[in-house]
Image 1 (cartoon, rainbow, N blue to C red):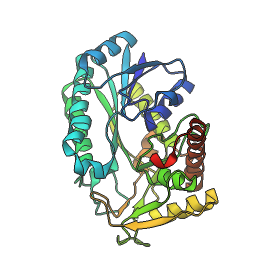
Image 2 (cartoon, rainbow, N blue to C red):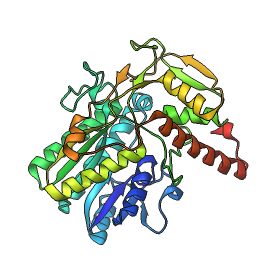
Image 3 (cartoon, one colour):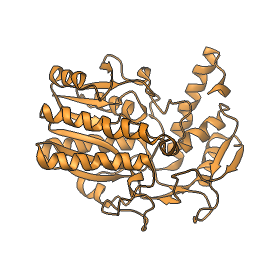
Image 4 (cartoon, rainbow, N blue to C red):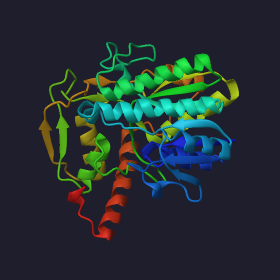
Amino acid sequence: MSILITGGAGYIGSHMAHHLIEARQEIVVLDNLSTGVAENLPKNIAFVRGDIADQALVSNLIEKYKIDSVIHFAGSVVVPESVEKPLDYYANNTAGARSLIETCVRHTVPNFIFSSTAAVYGSPPVIPVSEDGPTIPLSPYGRSKLMTEWMLQDTAAAHPLKFGILRYFNVAGADPKGRTGQSTPRATHLIKRACQVATGQVPRLTIYGTDYDTPDGTGVRDYIHVSDLVDIHHRVLDHLRNTGQSLLLNCGYGRGFSVREVAATVQRVSGHHLEIEEAPRRPGDLASVVAETAKLSRILGWKPRYNDLDVIVTTALQWEKKLKQQLDHAGANPAAR
């Protein structure tokens, strides 16, 4: 039996592909390459360029490769952009997921892992926030993901489909072996952006919002290393295959760092001064979001390997240096990124 990874050429998906190949799993990657980078995938795997909403294509992949599990990463992920383009987010994240789930049900695919987000919580009244906290998303991005959670739960109640819903907090870092990383040039991820400044690819780091009710006025987030995150996915996959029991889990470390703390860490690890500018808050951004992770540890027996901000920053910085070398070799202008 094989695993279908949607959005598998993207940031997290490509890490998942490398992880599963190392674990000797059979995988198929489906990606439309709107933001994914095929070169970041393992060599000699089954890769198909296409869309999750193409039900004929997905049906063919399920039958051809005997898919028993889907890990669904494909989607749009920028909160401020979702405020500007809500219909795009409902189309990509919600309508696309519905088509994919329907195809899986039609072919009796038993296992479905969904990349959800802490944005479903909105502004949590209690920090850290647990999985049973209220879900009141404040952005179309968060709502689009929550709708997909509901679809999965309702579908699992009516059909033999078991799910793992994983609510990501802030995913960061890169493959310690240097095989893949966050490759979207204009990505808004804080640690990537700070590392781009440190490597001279962009001139300055913008801090959006300095008047939050936090110790230093900037937003606080729970950063989880991408390699730890894909390890959680693998454990959830084993859990679904072995127990047939659905689950919903937060994915974080249970500790938050402010924007200024992250910037200071990047500056120290890189040895380069970061030019910083301050700007107003962005639509949809929150003051503080930190995960309660007791359920994750209890159910999966999971322990993180990379839960150190210096380690996260170091791997992200190494990846940015690699990207810069590629750009320099190609004669590209980093400022155009």
